[in-house]
Image (cartoon, rainbow, N blue to C red; front, top):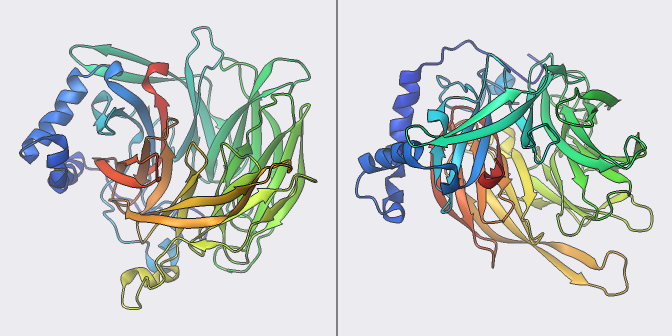
Length: 484
């Protein structure tokens, strides 16, 4: 069977979810010294107490977790190997809100009930948060994709309330009807505010949706002047054939993620890049005066499968790319003289050199190589890259020198491994760094949970803090609690 989803009918059973939740409580016994608790019952009590008694001010962040609501999703090994082994009895229920306290501990909000249900939007596997959206009330918006063959997406307006009886409640109200995503299996959405896009001085909200595609990857772009007016399609780019380096996965293009190069000048052209897993390419676009055009392509190593892409938040000529099919990360840069992309040296493995051994189950799945997300720390000094199957995060330090008389004064020299740490779950699909750089959250698709880590700002290393059960977690995004 081809395509991105391979559904097998199973029933969601809350008693089974409760059983796994209890198992996770037992697993959390190693957290007792950190939490100052003496038994697992008190962990249950703490989560209940937090949900019922903590106000929004007690949380540093609110997390939104998009979960697959159909079984057997986004696993390239479903057709050939029956998929990566995991508990298939658990199915996600939509988009779930969680609280992140000032120590990085995780708590269900709304008693764990979805703020966006599967009935409203199936397979809400990825989302983007829009802060300070222009509505009558102001506030925060969230746009969510529905990763199905008939791709859809929908905007929602977020609101919050707190009271002594129910604790903190997060609500998501539709801000418009579901819209077609412009392709099949939309798997990534991101947003930007661009000044002058409509030829005037006001800012326009732009949405960029990557449709992975059954037969072809597609980038779709939508715009809106304010969050309460309808988004309209602006542009659509089809990426065509794949590289065919891997005939099972690269017969056609597969648009997987988009990153926007930040700029200090709101009136300058906006550069966006798309990681195309199917064609082994990074596709570059420029946006200026309402026009979107392709400006170049960087060829990635054959059969590497570019998946995740992020520009450095401090040095916007640098970017990191995760190569899913070879289990590597690749440092690239935008040249100052012509704006084109180029690779900086060879890709770097995110796996131990002796892993996996031939007798391990993981070796059956593309020799254990299945990279997922990669991102920068907010200070631009460290890269965090997740490896599925190995279920780890590799932390790399950016090595660079500063040349005073160059336009891009920071000259990257490479990446140096400083830590490799277990993610405390199975199949880490998405990473999210808090804007303060203190916390890193990981969404695990196959162990059905989200884990949190605290980050050492001096050396970039991570320390595990907490884990919370969330079936088929696919994506996690954070917003400061004081902005809701």
